[in-house]
Image (cartoon, rainbow over all chains, first blue to last red; front, side, top):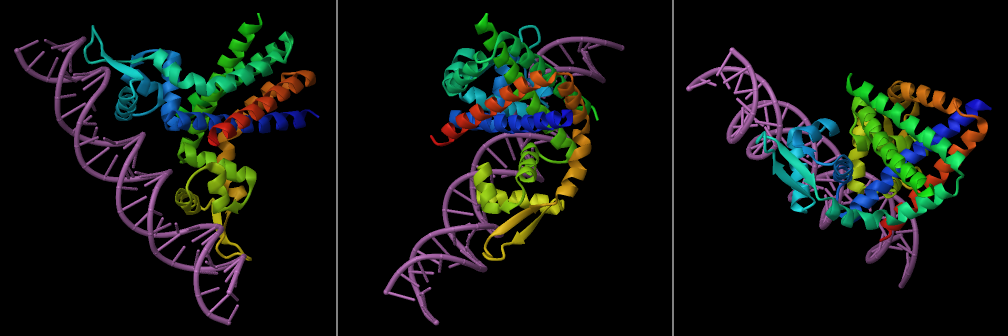
Length: 151
Length: 151
DNA sequence: TTATTTATCTTAGTTAATAAGATATTTGTA
DNA sequence: TACAAATATCTTATTAACTAAGATAAATAA
């Protein structure tokens, strides 16, 4: 029955979201971060250098909170502040990718290996289905988030 | 190329985890909770009533923090404290499922509809693949979390 | 030049966490 | 039975990270 499938996938998604959150917090803790700091460090790593203001907008923290965030990262030498050359008010937050990787990679290694193994256990056609499902889910969640934030 | 698939799925998973987190925080904010309170309320709802100590163990907060958590929920009349009948030291936290649903359901409605629509767009066989992938991923993440916590 | 705007930082106050100890109840033992 | 130890939760003091509002410094516009 179709309804049953929908219910099961929904439950699985809930578990997935919750479990993923728990895992990331456990990883953060092991690396000596809070869950939020870890989250934003990952974000910064993925997006690459940006100004404090951009980061504040993108993650939805006040500029004051972002100042504190950068301070904590800077103290650990994971990012550097770099004043803009054309506009000296701007502060670019430059992640030290190598250093961050050095810190985080070992903690993710086990997860990466097991995930890669799991992925490899599916055929190419099956992987396409999974990719399609995941990417469409991401789009839906982005949409919902944007709608909620604009209210 | 297989390596490429693995990399793409990994990237998708990262996006999925991050986006899901952002969405849940946006939903929490709209409902008037912090991200963590929302997370633990969902946990309580799913698991059903339990004692303060059990909750503390399961979510990894100190008992003091759990007291505060319950206080906040109780103030909003979303849970009730109920002393154990056989062991009067115990405090059962009883979620008011109906009231919690009333508060959260409208915020999830849009997401649920769109997700159901997405699920329905796949065939039964395809859904089985997705289910398999998601449930195995959850198992992996639980394993990793447990390993990290035990260190 | 001077006023306004922009980008970040600082300060004060709030919230929610931890750690340690208090309180209340139960369990084990002489 | 009495009393020590263990258990379950709560309380208090302290800390960390957030927001809001305003300060500072630099860029832009009149």
